[in-house]
Image (spheres, rainbow, N blue to C red):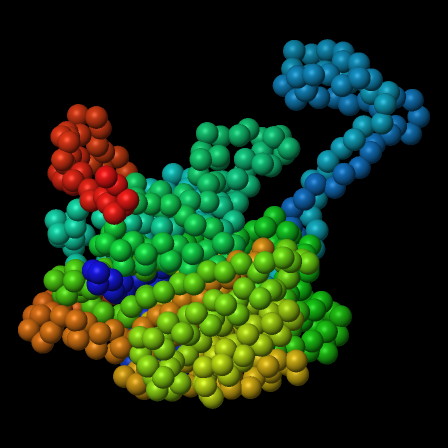
Length: 618
């Protein structure tokens, strides 16, 4: 039986409320106050470039205050005055209602009870005998005023010819470009070594594109007296982030798609990529998600379910007066007394190589993604309520770590990235699951992180935030504390668990694994097993031997230099997202094939396929 290929993480990128993911900058914003001065300075420089601040000198307070969770800013909407249409019925005081209108404002179908009299070339007088139903544009106070937002001043659409793309797709272009350039290996070189049909891209949006440039604009256009454009419908599709990466960043001809599992969607897509690498269907896999839900329509939906933390709820938690301003920075309080989650925007992407390709090209080893387990909840009383499926996924992910690393490393060299939304249901159900899992496997002090206290809940991209931040933990040796809370809630299970309320230093070389846990509406549970760089290096050396490892070390030096050059250029603002519109488009004349192979442009694709069911065929 052929050996399974190891999916090695060789690059990552993205953008969320903490900043740019590559170079561990977004992670470093989370643990900013625990970093040495030189690292803090570089983090500030990265943020300053993103936010359009010419110099970080004297701007530390501004840069830090306008990142992470905070009050919703005007770049999204004004939560004190959200636009809406008040429905009312107008009647005349005496006699019919009379209006003077321009001719082009008349409806195509004149309503019953209307009499229209021309009074000029341009105007008409309308006499209305029946009551008139009217939608009056006005504003309202929005009960949810906090969100995890991209750094103030950062606009991904201004970095390339975005052509009215929805915000989520703009963010995906940025994240995919950041991830691609973070590899430190030219994409053209990778394409020379990897057949075109052995590159996979799995990325999507759990909610689709719901802002005014996507489905949101399509659904409300006619209702608001506007026209529907030809871009609204196609650009709103949930798998469009993968389509954009293929069409405008990579030019990929390989497998593609988006597997949706509500808030667990990133891990669902990671599962696809891992399976492609392990079985040899692909040698390279790009895994991503983009979510841009910070708009009043989407937030209205979650608020109506009672899922979001409101200002009223936050004031009640802190015993504040009804007219006091709550601490929006602490809106998300995982595993503490809380009142709901905080919605957020994020786009994240990681790049996987199989182990042989990683060594061959000298790729930097950030870790390995070995398994993702997905289980449903079975019969449910409430579609949004927690169930038992997450017990299964957590147990399997932990068992997978044990199988690869052994009992000793399992018990002393791992951590859990909890889903940790900040809702009352999550704090009791997830803590119970984590505690019971630790007991079953003999783990006595399992570190638990909950990054949504900084970033908010980016829905389908949430696990992407967790994965890229875990890579930062292994680079810097600091587990971010759950700093938005003062104490665990009384109903939180903490037996065998170590909820770190303050930043916790660890030795990265002693770390073996992390479990990324994700839960979604409808009973979508996923838990992923990631291996640390230290554990991955040991596995690579054991499989490939010292000679190939030494060759990798030599070639990796040049790769690290290019990675540093990318990071320097990104901080200097001299690198733009990769966006190739109308570039290298292939057509019918570029395809030639025989019974055994085909050529598509410069790519050769093998058609001499083996029969996987040969034992059943005559």
